[in-house]
Length: 503
Image (cartoon, rainbow, N blue to C red; front, top):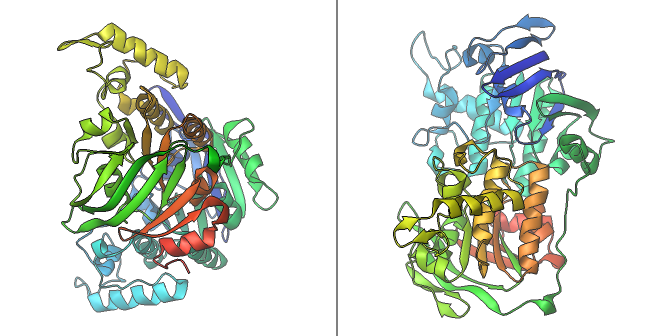
């Protein structure tokens, strides 16, 4: 890709970007949120058309009028949020949209058994086997990702783009994925790997291209590069890629947030949380590790009053919390940063100012009886924007127009207002760039140092090992093991995340 430029109203997403990947290599694409990675990928896969610039495949110029043209040219993308139809089987998802003759017994008739055999063969060859007859809703997230890759292999893709492919995987599943990618590259395919996890880029990539502000900054060999050097290229300054928690156990306070034998129902009627007992002391960060979908979201919602438990109790500073009542949790000093920051953390169509007082609009300083004091609300929003360095032109800006990092700053700033006693925070840095991650981590460390009890729910083991004092691992709704950070290893935690109990 040479001189690729793509502008949207008010922003130039790609500014004369050059990108080159060779056959037989794994090429990482790095950049902060808003650096232009997604736009570049959407151009390469035919979703967008560039305003300027050229694309060449194997030395021949190409123009894509639609994603179908890119697929026909051998380019396939596995998105961060999978494009699968849950009621369909694995085999049905693999051939969905396929218009060649690989799936057909004759001119018009699909041969399902032939498709299932080919899917099974590809799975065994590349070490990503999955039952072709299983329905998507029956599979783990790691298995669903295998289905996405099998779709690419079934279509004989020559260029595979993966967007944040390890976000839902255990360390063991991630290492297995890396083996699959290396096998594909060894066969002459090109793998483009988009990730924020610098150690994974080092582990799997041959070369790395860094974008910043919509421009190509550099393309470097992965082997001699370091996480610090790559992070500096991404953000244009030195950053701490791993900021480790330093805490004295003796200085921790009393138990602030606790749950006892907590059982919580899931959205499908089954038990999503099964008999969980946890304590978090003032000034302590306790992490809950686990692959997404093992009850972490339901646990967070029960602790913050959003979902009533079917059994057990939640206590804040020794006092039993009224279940299923978010207002009672707020009054008790429990703050909550949900994993879905746009859909649950804020009201996206409301302004920043309105979102800042979503939980505190009854406070005397921002309301008088039923009347909101809009000037005071604006002042509070201006102070939050200043204190947390939110990049926004005005407090009147709708929340949905903020980047992920700035949106998370607004949510954290709102939750920290009023000096909470406990903070339940889920996936606080998912989808954020290394600079924003550094900022969010520092906010959490500062809160813990101020005596706030923090329950951190995350799938990122690097984040957990950097921040947590203790680590509890959830699998299928249960806490299957608990370790101190000092005695924890990635291998042991990963094994428990996959269902292996601690030895």
